[in-house]
View 1 (tube, rainbow, N blue to C red):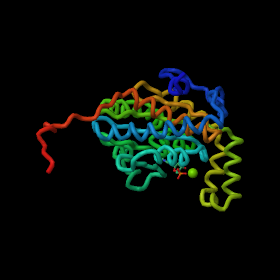
View 2: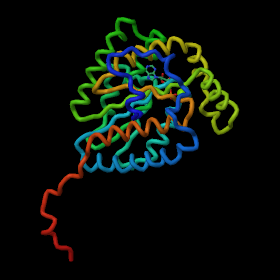
View 3: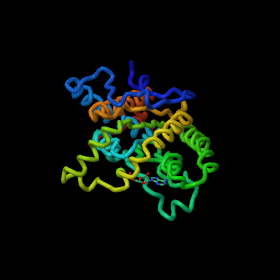
View 4: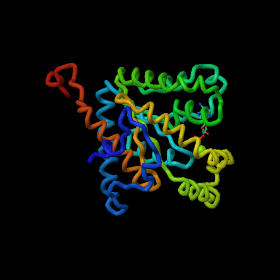
Length: 268
Ligand code: AMP
Ligand code: MG
């Protein structure tokens, strides 16, 4: 079964994250994975080349997940396979005063991909129904209306030829603790440790509920959500790259025909 079929949240369904095993590897094991991952990354490079050459459509990959879920690592792997000319990452932090002075989609829309481009979002407009909801940063009556706004916005992107894929990197609470511990123990990871992450961990249940709502309400045909079992980094990388490859392959992209008769060009 295609991983995009196995891991998609069918539009209209209600997701219960407890039922999704963070350790799932869809039958792959660590030994057999290298060849599959290498194949995916090579294929990704080829498909991105076509997307760029064709320059009619584009790809937007949205990465969400709790702290230490692996957003940065996924970006390193997936982007590493692509030509930097045509691939870009946009990270969304606490809104700047300029961003906060606008509607919540303003800063997001400006980072949407142009035709031929791949853009990866490290966090996104979903923060406005996640951290904002968990910490009551705006009243419920405000964030509650955002699910519809998000669906309309993503449908508008899809109409403009943007293929939107949304990945929730699903880790367990124990795995998060192990990764936090590594951030404290490993000097090369110390810089990633943040007291805010430890504080957010206390809100695990609230975040789970907020994610379940966001994923259930906003998995649409135009912009589906995928739940990626992410306790095993190797499987996470395989799953994300494979779903992107499966999506791009379905676009059946063609190189543009030259606008002139090549045979008439004489090289001297
Ligand atoms: P990081 O991605 O680890 O660099 O952290 C960025 C932080 O910015 C996270 O704690 C996010 O939850 C937070 N953040 C992102 N977008 C928003 C937003 N719209 N409102 C409040 N906090 C946000
Ligand atoms: Mg962080």
